[in-house]
Structures are given as C-alpha cells and as structure tokens.
Amino acid sequence: MTPVLKELDGLSVRVDDVIYMPSLDAPDERPHPFVYFISISNESGEKVTIRGRKWVVRESDGEVTVVEGDGVIGQSPVIAPGESFSYNSYHVTRGEAVAAGAFFGETDGGEWVFTRIPEFRLEVPGWA
Image (cartoon, rainbow, N blue to C red; front, side):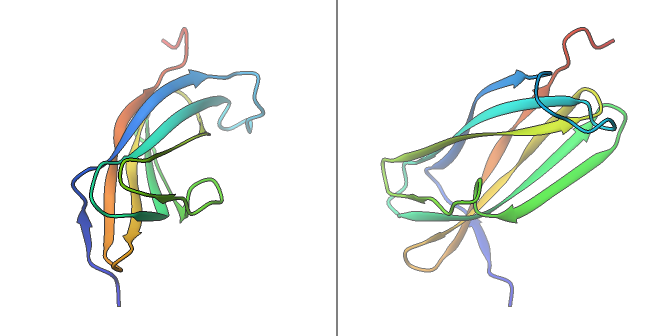
C-alpha cells in the first residue's frame, strides 16, 4: 500500500546558491555541470526523517529528466523542530534548464509528508 502524503506546514526548502562549474567532469552528451546548495528547514512541531527525493529537470529543448531516490546524498537526515539540514550536490545538463522537485519524509508518528523544492534556473554563461 502506498503511503498517503501531505505537505507539512513548516517544513521548507531554500535554494541557497547555484553555480555553473565547467571544471567538473560531465559526460559528452550533458557537458554542463551545476552545483546547487540546498537547505531543508523544519519549523513544524514534528521531527522529520527525510526518506527520499524527486527532481524534475526541464531542458530548454523540451527534454525532461526525472531523478528519484532514497534519502539525500546517501543519508536519511533527521530534522528536529527548529533545525535545518544543508547539503550540496549537482546536476549535469545539455544546455540551460530549470530544476524543481520535492523531498519526502516521515514524522516520528509515522505520517508521510513532503515539501517542495522551489524551481531554480541552471543558466550556462554565454548561452545563446
């Protein structure tokens, strides 16, 4: 049975920075690497364990890539009320793109919750 998800008031995501990093390794078909810095803040009254994530990356040419997985960067962070968890990771693209998504968590009471990752742009310098 699939758990019922609800958006948890007070659980939020902030995109702290997005940096184009052409010095990072990237495959020939996706030559544009971007490092992004994310903070997940918990101002709810519930302790939340982040169990998974889903990213949707929309390229300027219309291609959509969906990335889903367990946890966050190989971890399942527990975020108590008033605390936050910050990390950085990266996406590689063919050109300019827009990224957004969600984090999925579980409260101490076993309720499944989510919070949205606000949309942000992956802009290639000099892209025409």
